[in-house]
Length: 456
Image (cartoon, rainbow, N blue to C red; front, side, top):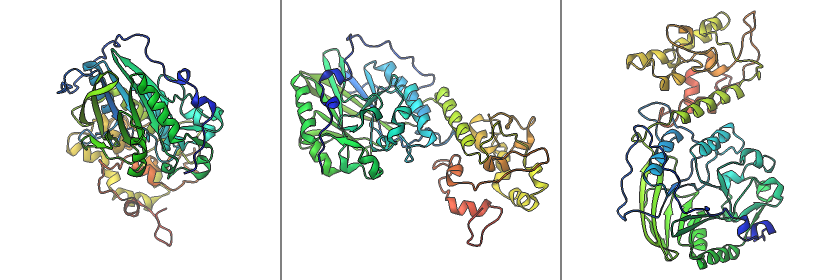
């Protein structure tokens, strides 16, 4: 690996680091969320600090709004975090990175970060998916605010490209002193555009090792966030931090393992958090207890997070409009389209889309707001479905749910762009439609085909 020395900014001492709190007093207790699950005491007793850790969110604000399957999203994660902060005020919320969707400029990424700030997270480690954001957009995507962006070993060569970053997050909890650093080796940037990687500087491992040793000499417990494979993990353990949190390629649910004398915890899934209770003595971890917390139906849904999710869906629908409409779409119902598209309308009438709302009625869920977005047309959007009595023409998944066009006064519309896999995936999520396969589904619902059989 070609080692590149970092610029002066990264090598400055503590003036560049996230400052320790000015008081040892704990923050005011968080308000316990309604109907939240109770946080159980840890077997080690009262910890000095609990690290509530996530990783690998990959842009998943929510997987589905279906009540029976709505797990792993920010709405329940928010309630889990609030419950921990209420029970244990010294709870530090940390995300190990890869929070963004694989497309670094996708609209959803802005809403994920808004959710993180709203939750709120204390620390977001910039992983390779965060560094994949083009240099010109870094400051815009990672807006300054209460959320701390941690990056110890990676910086842009042009410092003007970077958002406000900190190389070390330091916190004090009574007598316990904690520092969090990150380690992202260059060779782990597999999926980042090569040109983007060349715009970055990577600090040599020996510089990071010296920083760790200097913090430990101050009787500070050092937690190192490592992104990488087992090969680069050995490089991290050689630096002898007190604890390694491994993200990026990790899979959660395993117990704490010891690698070359250093405890390692693998974190990396949007459906489970690691709750790590620490008791510290004389700058060392005296006791550690790991608990896996599934973000499941035990935790209440935070309504404000669902509102954020719906806001994103509305924004995405608007962004996909092929005509970049200057005003909201006027939703007219499938019958208006039938006057010109008779064959297509007849084909639609035989599809499950035409019976989507009726399917809810069979299980007495026709008024469940969590179901209506995907079983009606434009629910909660201006001019969209309101109720079966007020807007019966917009019950079910009608033409404009997918095609997003306006009709003029003569009933004509402009060019209709093809529906994409991403369009379908906003409702056909892994939990709501576990057997969904895009190409097969497109052939089932498409109204016409080209010579190769591809749906138009």
